[in-house]
Image (cartoon, rainbow over all chains, first blue to last red):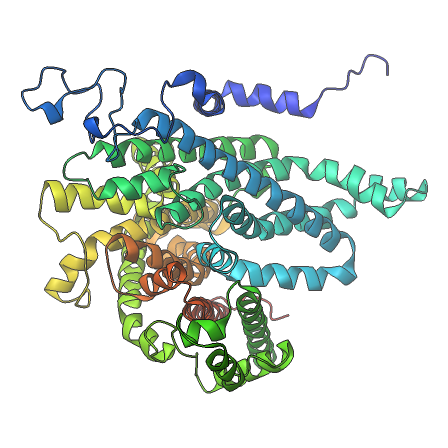
Length: 298
Length: 313
């Protein structure tokens, strides 16, 4: 018995993940992205609000500094160009990414905590099951963006309200999956064994069952990150949630749309940022699912 | 069967009731005084008080909720703060455009998504499968509004072959087709991807089943096996997805409308939000959610007719 070494299942899962090239690439892209946005002031010399009316709508590094038209000249230091207020696009991209990733993370976390608790209770206690799951059905029935818009309309425009709106939409996904898992685990012999040893319900739920639900929760959380980032960029594209001058990728695209003729890079740059981030989270979620919980496959 | 249908209809009514409660209480707790909104900014205290009494806003929450339900039963959604018109009328004027867009996208998703999903299952792990599944991943990952803006840039700004926005005709007319094509593609990208994924996995499942192996060992042609034997069973999971898809297309249409400047329910609702026009927001949300629930019910009922194996619990 002494020879059996207990392996941490998450380290094993991470090892398996790094064996997949695509997933590794996505993991590192996201890691770099997180470092860039968290330490944004280190990577840019300009603030996201800093305006320079003399260099409005300038192109980035792809244009020459010697273009005959002065408006088409690249301005040293603004390697992704400037927007209609003469603000540096690179700084706005970084600070905007901060908002997108933070909202994505916080709203997923809020949805996770509430959703997992609801799922655990519904799965464990038959009496609560019906009530909780019917409430989840109602939440699930509302098309997500619609629910988010209703909440923001009622509570007002603010980053926190946007997070709240998006997190409420995440609750039912967590609750449903966790409930299903709990119903399975509850019947296992080791739960019965723990119970006969005199463990209380709270211990069984939060120590034994929760531990075995973790793989499922991690997979859903990764995928919800992708959805939450899409939601926040959509909301801010519509002018809801994030208030200017605070940048957000969706809001940048919305502002850039007016200058699509002159300077399409204003929509392409934040657009590419959103897409890469969401694709990476989705791929990572897919691979994690294959490794941690293949039963979630549709 | 009859018991099942009754139970489902009862459930639907309960869901609708729950939804009216959420929507009503969300308005109740919203900041701002409705009486002040209706009276306008220059109204005197007495005027506001008079309107409050006239609208029944001085009554308790429960009384107000009950009278709200009573009005809903007679399809009265209240009056818009800004235009002073009945909201029901304003919704009905805009509804056709939203439905037009959602239907065009639905058609596109079915026609493009299902065949591609089945194709990629048949060509599993070959080049075509890889291209299609990668495309589906991108389709799921790209936000509707972003795809819309990109399409607009390519086809309306650069190539100038399609209009950049607006909608005046239905999509089956020549003008309407041109107007609907970009918004419909933008909106359908997610659901096409969903159909590809579901179509692929369900076809793969069916192809592994015993009766397909029997058909193969009988020496039937691949074409016959796929189209006659496998397809019908592979379509069942896709069918259940249709209702949810149409609902999310309706929700998504509201955003796509804003991108392509289409005067549908979505634009109406978003304008309502930005102008603090709460009754409009409330009614549009309720309206779309109700449509969503009813469509899902219909799909579920159709589903048990198509697949008799389903158990009516």
